[in-house]
Amino acid sequence: MTGITTIDEHDLNGFRALIEERSGVNFDSSRERFFSTRVREHVEAKGLASGAELMPLLRSSNVEYEALLQRLLTHETSFFRYPSAYEALKKRILPEVYARKVWASPRSLRIWSAGCSTGEEPYSISIALAESPGFATGWNIDILATDVSRQAIARSTKAVYPRRSLANLSAQQVEAHFTTAGDQCEVKPAIRNKVSFVVMNLVQCLYMGRMDCIFCMNVLIYFSDERRDQLIRGFYDSLEPGGYLMLGHSESLGNSAVNFEKIVFDDFMLYRKPGGENDTSNFRSKL
Image (cartoon, rainbow, N blue to C red; front, top):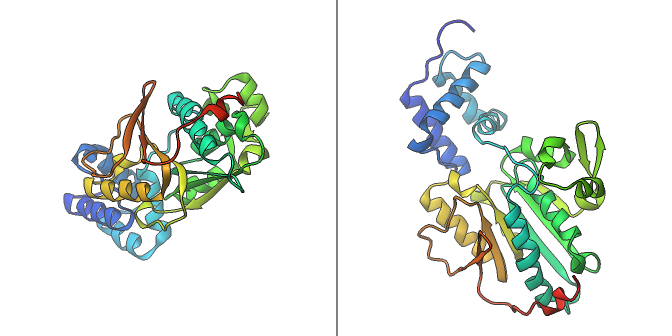
């Protein structure tokens, strides 16, 4: 393509409206430069002369729409990206689940990684569970991992990552949970088999049964206040009594009126749905 690509404010507003309508993602004024730059890159990569030529493609093809969304959503992450979150999982949340369900038959543990990106988060959850003796055997463990990006889910299911993604893991953890070949590290089946990946738009998601814990880290920042509140209410309804919601460090419940208990564990904020039992002595005795 030669010449200058034309993208005006009318084009950008149209793209914003379409993305919020279809995916609930809101690119507000704080992301103006990022949004316009990424859209321009996408239009130029497709060899189009203007933003106006892109809109009919987005409306007529899911593939075209998802390609733009993929360029706009950042997928930078790593294993155990926020170590304090996994410490809270192992030392606060899992002991409560164990105490609440140890005498149940069958014993089940369900965790949802909402907005799982390329899979490092749900696999980190699976590793944390594998390293928690009370959950080593005798439990039906289900880790549901969802993301709006088909490309991200496809990469997640391959479960192969560059070594730099494992920087927060010890050498012992890498050896125990990965098969390495040069710079590439593949998650071992024992960790992979506990995770189910599904392409899912959070704004349109269906009820999938009760969860003991929901990770939704650095996802709410992409939504408007109204959408955020809807998602938080949905997460609340999806949690078991005594279940936990985990958000990113820069996120909060905002003005949502849901009745979560706020609990600080070390430097990490947890949001607990009231109910359930808190006696963790049975689990502690397993450590």
